[in-house]
Length: 112
Image (cartoon, rainbow, N blue to C red; front, side, top):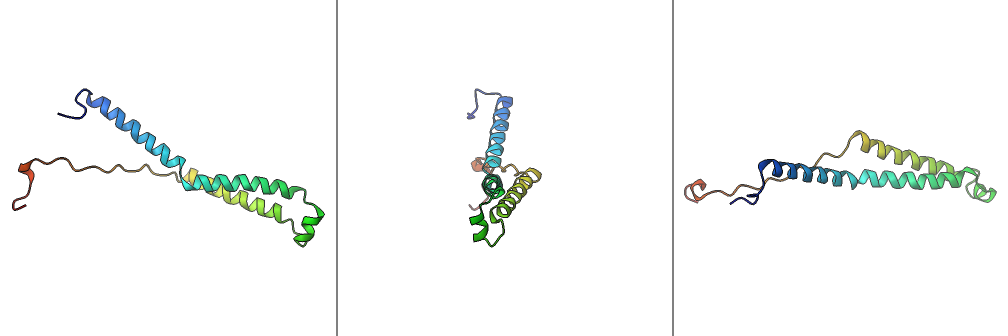
């Protein structure tokens, strides 16, 4: 008997489609580009805010260059690049591996 003997073919197909969509959502949620882009944007905002009004002491340490502002803006750009890349080239859905069907003894090759 079939594993789905109490279900119709349509119910089985609906369940397979639902599981495939969950798998695609999980693959997109844990895409490394999302994690890297999100962290760079977050830290870029923090560092840029710190660089908006630098103290005289921090400017003296960096020889007059506002390091926090430039580094924060660079981090923001890199994070936005990763997030844009994710949006333009989304992760493809994983292809489920098809298990070989159970073969009957009549299907075995001769001599094996």
